[in-house]
Image 1 (cartoon, rainbow, N blue to C red):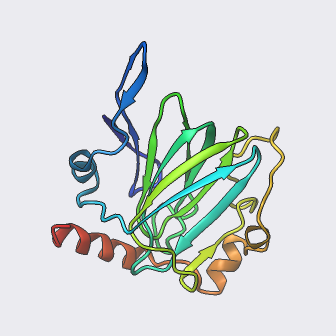
Image 2 (image 1 turned 120 degrees about the horizontal axis):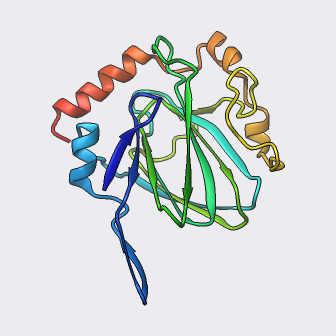
Length: 202
């Protein structure tokens, strides 16, 4: 499995080796030892989510309060999505920087984003199936969003796909508004949390 760090620090893309034969294909889409070598700690899975999206569905930008946050290991089992990671950690040297990876049923890549980073994806096909492993369960009082079409973020969503947002995502604040109201996580607090994960042997 190949591992590459994204432009947003503390996020990675994992590209598995595939073994095709006349029956189909086999691959290992998550490997704990490879993950630990890349990230520095194990992924303690507390919840596994699965979404099915029509073409144009835009989910995010979502994030959770740190601690404990909610890290995600994201994998597309059918169709294709454009998966986006955004650095929304206040005080980060790369604050506002984003990176995007096409996740599909061809290359079968996965993206991992650490706690405190923003996450969004756009369904590029109908019936796009996304599975993600989460480090913490869903916490409605500790989860927030930034508007995915905020011009300041300028996320690289294609222009030829009509966007379909939930009411909650459509009403989310801009990055500037979230910053002004103290909604965004602290880079310093996130780094301290990552260090605790690495030093705890998890």
